[in-house]
Image 1 (cartoon, helix red, strand yellow):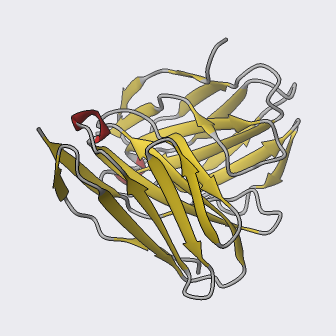
Image 2 (cartoon, rainbow over the protein chains, first blue to last red):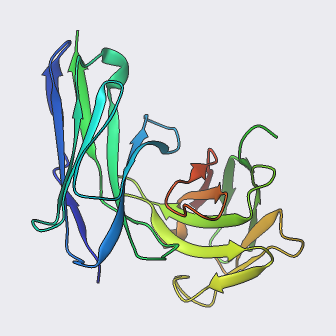
Length: 111
Length: 114
């Protein structure tokens, strides 16, 4: 049974700070990794995908992947109150159409 | 349409009743997915369609659940003899089919079984 683990939070950071969200996964053959943002009462929205070890930056967001440690993280620089949401980590295997989601980490950015 | 459309947005039904949830994917997206999300949980995979055929329906919770996509576009998730445990938000997503993890979700259908 594939598992994706996230700290449920809430994680509170002041406006302008760096928010660090972490995720571990159990299936060593996982190949693709995603971060989805979900505002309260809304559906998930893809914000980052990462497929190889290292860092991937997109604006204020940086995804980091370490397959040896089975660990993926999301950094949000210059956090804004509008970043307050639940962040879902999702993982899939090679050629797999199925995403396994974590329970999500609730982020609160305090003005 | 501009995004994935799901109807109804809310459905309240009584235990034992039959419900249908509809999904209209983004135009041109060949892959369609159904997920279920309970409160405080991440989305849980139910079924995937590439074109008209279900690639794998083995993740449906039980035989009360069934999904179709007869013409390769709109899909319907059907739940027979609903139970209170079926209460959740049912999310439909679509993708271009190649990057299957990069999903575009609809706003979901919230099902409440009394």
